[in-house]
Image: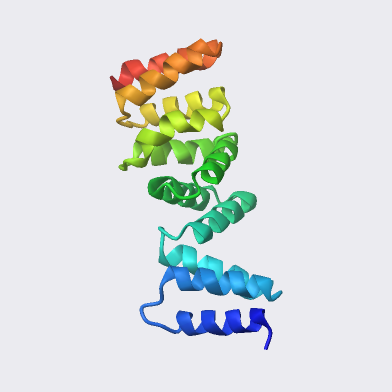
Length: 182
């Protein structure tokens, strides 16, 4: 029996456990993909992303798929799940950058930023490395207008860095956000 067949069989055994852990579904998806069964892999990742928001591989795959399909609420939810856990942070920030270039995506992400959570604190400054400064400033301003309570220190640091890097327009928008939040 080939290694890929053994991997699929073992993953199917894991999926049969109750309660079914998201990690087992991800293992099944990866084994199926290696065995050339893309349909089972897709279904496994979809199920894993719905069962466990802490399972990073399925969240990343789900976010990318949702982004490609224009399902921006789902994409933002999965991106936030990744940012909340700190898993696969760079790809998550890359998808955040892509999402907020789309007006509807920006609107949805601003609403998520305005919601509860601790992920925003580290994301505010870390996103600067991945996200266009104007897009990020506009998203934070929109979140602020939606009632976001954003942490002062990261906002001030972002505003100072943006100004120092010569992004005058973004720095001006961030000054507005700092004034509203601090």
